[in-house]
Length: 164
Image (cartoon, rainbow, N blue to C red; front, side, top):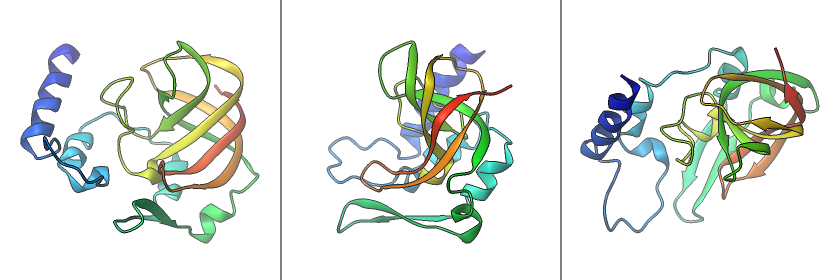
């Protein structure tokens, strides 16, 4: 069934306007039809995601940067050990990695752009390499606010490890 689901979702993505050949300007992912498709993807119910989604994310067309408005509830997480569950999105081609994104929603593919909005992703740096998996995983680590609007990363888990 999954073998049919992903091509169907990709085709729907194209029909809904997510792919525009010749498009030159960078637009935020949720301005296209992807969001409709992503809503049907598996998603983590971990309460941390609800807290992070309180932060408003905008795309500045002039500066070509994502910007975030942090709320006090999220600022309070700074330097705290937190637990998150989600889907692993490697930042390299390795099957074992110490640096990846953890996303609330399942990605379309291992090398695809992170699904959802930038407030639904954590940059993770682990103490030990983690085996890549398409299944949901749990990670705990030290929460850090970062400001990488160019890449759309605003939150990180440092010194992280897999959690049960």
